[in-house]
Image (cartoon, rainbow, N blue to C red; front, side, top):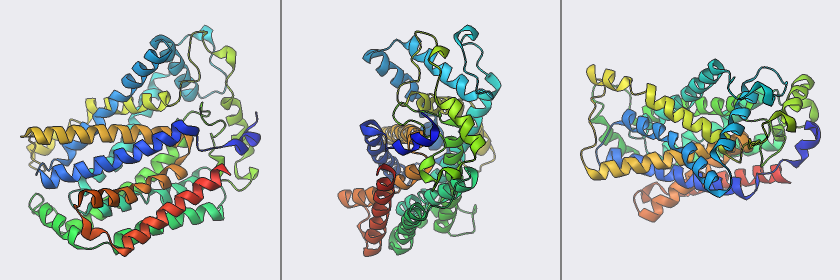
Length: 411
């Protein structure tokens, strides 16, 4: 199948991807609400430590996935062999297939380490900024601004993937971004005032700006960085073919015509997109089962975080920038564990979806977390004052934009 003909068959990835999308949205809402609760409700304001615990917890995703697959049908050795083969293909600078005679031990280690370090940085910078912003600004504002990464992902996609502007999809992204803006500027100020008052006690003398404004700016920077990260991941890291969605390597669903992708890029991707069946060992599961490859990368990011990013904690404590202390109550411990679980599920899910759907559909879809945040606030009665006609209007814009974009992809 050529890349040109395959583009017509792009879908939303079947039940597995859609189910994963729903679970990821719910996990993000749980993570957000618990993060706000532990910092503002339980008084444990250690954003960097919480970030470190959450991102280190990513390392559990590969063992859990491998164990599930091993119990279901395959041996761990066969799964691992197929996973290493997929990594070698992706890291190789040549489009020549990797054959059995070469073995599985010649993984380009330096490239792999560099890739994991870059992925860790790409997730650390926006993730840490988000954790810093949560105790400063209203959680609805933080959620809305964070999810404007859909617009930035579209801009970066057009620029870096050499795509043309497609009016309907651009309109959907802008409409979703408008909805997020309406939510931010149309919500009540009372929630923000309470949050700011709680934040000042832990940040006295550190910032002269309004805590709420600073939180908004941190989230906006995080949104831009995360939008760029999604596009670079899809372009350079994700597998060129996925068991659920074939021939989606160039995220062609954004292009208005076959000329949107240069011929040399298309030809090179066409060579990689169709694996040679003789290139893998007879017992290797190749291509890897749905989600295994991105879960491997997610776990590698978690391990890298655990081994490296503890270093700033004693430095921040020594210079009295952020004095460190462990959770003092069992409630704080359990809530942090819940944040870690929600964060691991959300980030692992969206790593998979970025490879399946591409950055635009994934990031616009994540805007639905705003709607779910308001629903959870209404359900638990914690921030009813922030639910206004403007917030409802903005949420409606987001839902309509995602629905239109999803319809445009599957029709």
